[in-house]
Length: 69
Image 1 (cartoon, one colour):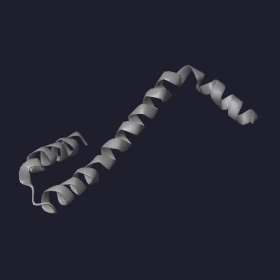
Image 2 (cartoon, rainbow, N blue to C red):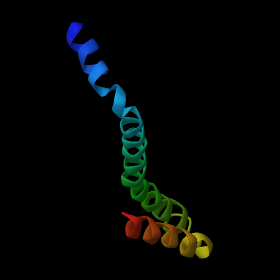
Image 3 (spheres, one colour):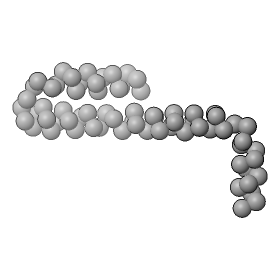
Image 4 (cartoon, one colour):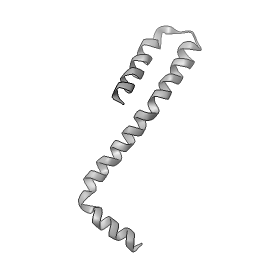
């Protein structure tokens, strides 16, 4: 427990950096998990139901996410 208190005291000046790093880590995880969701939607909703009306939108979002990655 003493070690954790010492660690928190040492990290106190850097709390903003740690907080922003945590948010960026969550954002990165969301970006990494997004392409499979869009691929599933393309397979299930476009190919499975044979409805091409959403294909352009889903592929556009997928390409935008992959470029952002």
